[in-house]
Picture 1 (cartoon, rainbow, N blue to C red):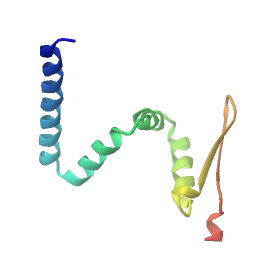
Picture 2 (picture 1 turned 30 degrees about the horizontal axis):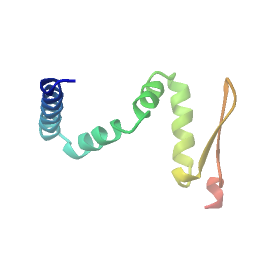
Picture 3 (picture 1 turned 30 degrees about the vertical axis):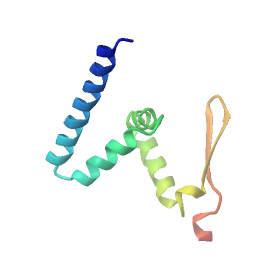
Length: 97
């Protein structure tokens, strides 16, 4: 890689950072936008979000209800039991809290 390629990549990253910062500042809720940007950089999270977005409404509702009932997100356990069965459960039931 030549020096100009390296500098060009750095400049694109700097330009992208400036655009993102401008979007954050222009957002009606900059704190939320900044948090979304932060989480979007977490490896694999965007693919999970995209998958949830395309779920049927009934499936999303069930998933949301399950997560909201969890005493703590750390108490949720997920296990892939087969190629087509994902099991979600609480380490403690919501009543045990």
